[in-house]
Structures are given as C-alpha cells and as structure tokens.
Length: 417
Ligand code: UD1
Image (cartoon, rainbow, N blue to C red):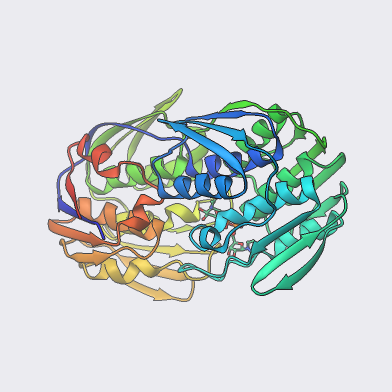
C-alpha cells in the first residue's frame, strides 16, 4: 500500500490546476445509462479511483467506455443489464445511482444495499421513498434491493432531507419518465445544476436544478450528448486550505469562486487575502489564522467535505475554534490523527473544539476516509518535519495526481510504494 512522505513547513507558492469535479462526473457518467446513443463527457478526472470504479460499473452493466485523458466516451454494446454487482457497489456507494436510470428505462433494478462506511450509516431510504412515490414497489432479498414498476409515473416528491444522492437518482429517473416530476427540498449543490444541464442535453426538460425545487419533464427515449464537467470545488477548497495552513500564496486555475462562497467567507475571516475572477482564485496568507468556528450544512452552507481540512487549518489558529458536523454522524476520525501531530482537539458528539497551536510536528499518521486523508495532507504540509501518511488510497479516491500538483507549487512530498 502506497504512503505519502511529506517534508512539511514549506509555504505553497505557485499555480495549481483544478480538475473536473469527481462528484459531478460520477452521476453524469451514470446518467449515460439513460440513452443508447453515444455520449462524450469532458473534463473528467479519469485517473481517480472512484472514476475507474464508475467505468467498471458502466461496463458491468453493458456499456463500452473509452477514456482518452480527461475525455470519456460512452457507447452502447447491446442491451443493458439491470443488476449492479456487489463487488463494485461495496467499493463505491455512488454506484446506487444506477438504480434511477435503470428502473426508469426497464421497470426493474437490483442493487446491493451499500451498507455504512467510516463516516456514518448512510442509509438510502430517501432514494427508495422517492422511487415508491413514482410507483415502484420494493422487496429486499439477500442484501439486495429489488425495485420494480411496469412503468414509473411522474410524481411530486418531497425529500425529508436534501440528500445529494437521492436528488440525483430521482432527477435521472424523472428524465426518462414521461410527465412532470417535481422534487421539493432537493439538494442545491452545484453538481445538481451540472447534472440538470446534462439531462437537458439528453432531451429532458429540466428547471430549477441547483435550487430547492426541481421540475423535470421526461421522455422515454433520450438522445446522446456531449458535456463538460464543472471544476471540483472540494479539490479547490482543499488546496486553498493547504495554502492558508502553510502561509503561502497560490493561484488555482480553473476554480469557480461562486461554488465556494461559504468557504471563502470563512477563509477571509481567518485572515486570508482572496481575489478571484472568471475561472481562477488566488489566496495568500501571511499570519497564523484567526479562530473561525464553522458548522457543516447542505449547500450553500459550509461543505461537510471540507470540514476535516478546515479542522487542520484551525489546529494552527490563534484562539479556540469550534467545528460542528451536522451532515454525517461520525466524521471526526481525523481528529485523533491530528492529535498525533500535536493538535489540541476535544471531540464531544458532533462538535470538536480546537485550541490552536503555534505549529504542528510531523508524525506517522493514517488516512481513514477520503476527506480525513485530505485533512492529514493539509496538516502534513504545514507541520514541521516529516509526516508519513498511510492508506493513501483514500486520498486517491478524490485527488488526481496530488503529489505532482502540490510539488508544482513548491511542496516537498513523494509517494512510496
Ligand atoms: C454526496 C457526496 C459526498 C458528500 C455528501 C454531502 C458524491 C459522490 N458524494 O454523498 O462527497 O459528503 O454528498 O454533501 O457526490 N441520508 C439518509 N438517507 C438517504 C440518503 C442520505 O439518511 O436516503 C443521509 C446520509 O446518511 C448523510 C446525509 O443524509 O448523513 C447526507 O447524505 P447525501 O446528501 O445523500 O450524501 P451522498 O449523496 O451519499
């Protein structure tokens, strides 16, 4: 298993290119199951582990996937299967998004229940209730959910929580279902808007994607399309936090400031100087960050995916900061690892209180999930001395060529097999 060795304490300085958004590319690629015609998806972070898993998922269901750099072409090879393999779903929970398109097109789907993961239980009840509102019946069988409906019906669906995955699954199901489906209390993340655009290009009529009420008028037969994925706001946010923690100066090329409103506001409060324009963000930080408390919320609130790296920044603050996690029930696994580097963090339930320190010291530490891994990366870059991060495969799920990108901005880090 690979490890990352970081010689920390060096300010990041330079330009970093932001990749396409993993969390937008995944549902958009899965949405190609809605059509038999070819699709071309550009700006896909195709070297990420989760993307490779998505390609395998599509191929296991009967598509052909051709990858050329960040351009991915998806073709039909005949009829699609309606059963997602457990081998793939257990590696990537987002595989459950195949349920919406397959159920809408074929009236039947069998998917393994994804089970919990390090950060929480992560049930899929909101997805399933939505399908039921569209007329599907469900039965459970040997760890799988089987959903069937001779034909899904357009419906008005109110989500009990604005789940990202459930909103995407239902948007895709609605795109292939004749009539007008309305999703109320929908997730508002920029990735919804991107998926909405793609579904529109496939031939559905989509209104309000990226707002709390989405309406979709679907068509049973959709066409192929070409689409360019939005930039990855979480990757961009992670690099901004790494820059602030190392008191450096970076320019992120390809980043969209509008997608990072709550994070940029918190960074400014902490003392960062930020400038942005069309497709770029620049950050510089001269002093230790001020203490800024945050609570994670669905978009446009502070993203849960940047909670862990934010905590790393706050371990260096002048004062005491509170970090409250409201989206997932167990997303503080990084706190103990940061403690090994000298951070002072007291966790109680869903809140962590961080007493800022002058500096962190490098240590051998271990990533427990993708964003906890990102937090350790931020801490390792800022810490004095050598940090060794084990289980880098978690980081590789969400950050493309991370050591090349960071060493291009002056960081000293290398991968060791
Ligand atoms: C997506 C993102 C993930 C991010 C999360 C929240 C992808 C591939 N992943 O995950 O990076 O951290 O949004 O921004 O885009 N829930 C239920 N029942 C459901 C569905 C969700 O109780 O049917 C709960 C979950 O357990 C969790 C919360 O709702 O506590 C948020 O989940 P959701 O918004 O669905 O996140 P994902 O789509 O899994």
